[in-house]
Length: 537
Image (cartoon, helix red, strand yellow):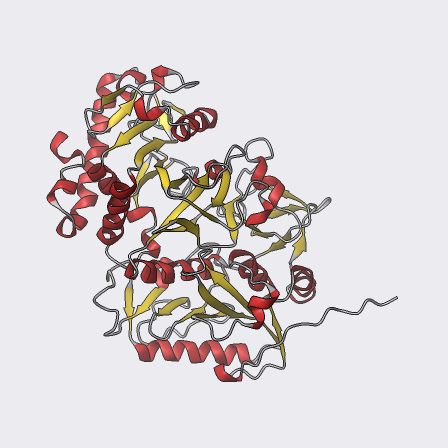
């Protein structure tokens, strides 16, 4: 007996100059699975039911190929430089035409209409046009999925994304430096992707748009995860670069998950931008990250992972394709997710850093000026041996813990953060998830159980009145007692056996902070500049 397929929503794309006959709008996951298996060679289904897809030669973002159209209406707002490289409107139009020409050659196109932002007064209508079902399923997962009624009344989108990533940019086009181009125009309200099939480019393009529009309204867009207590009235936000534990620590069974990556802090609390989560899956296991592990079932997308051909089981330890293996899943796949993904104002802000030098305390309390300094700095460290040529820990600074996605100068976001901290009397903490007792190779990694105990104590309000000592190099207050955490690791100066080596390493790291912050000094107050380690070295 043949089962009649469900009616598919269609959409006339002639307004974009697209005349493709078969257009699938907001196709459900089973249809996108079927199309991915039929039309995308190499696509598989894992033993848990997740769609396993591959992004080709690009297995991560291409920040050097990102361009923003320089336009009189927005050019004074944009932080121009390495993060936001300028493109003229003509070049953007050429790239868009190239993308549309390619999409017009496809037998079928996929359209995903969804929302960015769970707050009904601040959400944006996003439209994605692509030719790979994998990309459609990814954005169906990462955007907030409209109800049937909302889809019927969707109307004109606020922002349209053309993904022709299978087709390269023309390197002879003025301003192109490679076959990859990630181009945004705030005035055209469009984004064009050429030469990269990595799905994360779409997600971060939407985030970049929000990073431009939200501060114009006095709202703080943030690259962070967020949780809330069981009432939803008190939230907590966690900032951190890749590898610091932002997603892992937000998957906390004792709290409600608001989101794992992108949020906005508004006048009545915080809200998630996305409808899904995008977790790194390297070394994923049910023992260390059970919530994320169980979420990777039917409806989820596994990206660039290696399968065991016998049982189609994923080998999460295999990095032969990339170390940046990823899993995308609807946020409701996390059992304790709070839907809608909104919560009250934060009581605590946590800056996560993986300090492979082992000189930052496991947990410190920051003043407002120190919080602005460390927010703008956005520090973590790469561990020796994880990348070719890295033989010892290497410092990494990313402004506001998300420099590649900023539009305004980092001081704009830091000022909004400080304003909201003061208004809502928020505690700010710097939590080191890296090394203690010595640098990588000498000391040891702080146990995840200890970090969880620190975060639990923050949320319980225990650390707000805990004893502290002033760090001699960075000036913040290191907490000296945390329940269930050995006190001998809480103060780096006593955790190290070699005092001279500790002082030399701490001094070197402090100097790195000072050197990095010089690029921001002209845009921030003298009080914030003085809140770093400059006066202590």
